[in-house]
Image 1: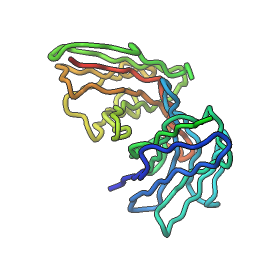
Image 2: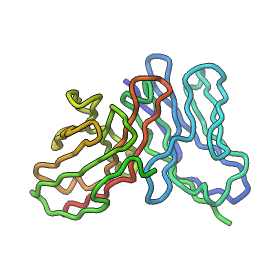
Image 3: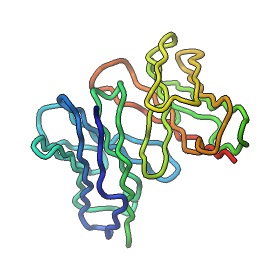
Image 4: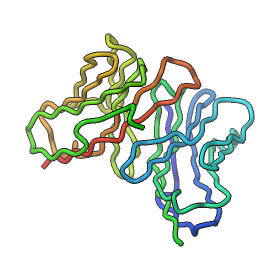
Length: 113
Length: 114
């Protein structure tokens, strides 16, 4: 069975500071991993995805994530946070994007001025 | 992204009522999905459809039914709504089975069952 754990329910960060969101997964085979962002009142938007190859993947809006197989982790990072990054972030795992995904519970990011 | 639309956006109803949530897409995608989102639980898959003649249950299909009226339309029904079906419901679409094909999400429908 596949599952995702996001240990941090809520993170507050100052504008301009760095951000790291944790994601741990459980999956029996080679995982396909994703990060989605949900802005208030909006649907989910894909930030980035990992299938294979380079374990450091770049996404939209200046985000990146690193796949670490030994730690079963896929943490999301951004060097300098903007106020518009305040949102809820979801990590997901699945065989591929068009099949069933398992989502984590989400991490809410608050950005303070 | 207006390519995936959901109606209504908000709905308040009473226990026992039949409710239909509708999803339409103009992306030409063959695959469509219904999820519900609850605080602290993330998104959970209710039903998914790979084409008009293919409907599959997700992890939490009890109490729900779906209809794929056309490639572009996928409706979710609650035959007899109950309060624990109060949630935010998302429709999503995807193209084919390619590993690089992402799911695109609609804006969501907030359903409250009193």
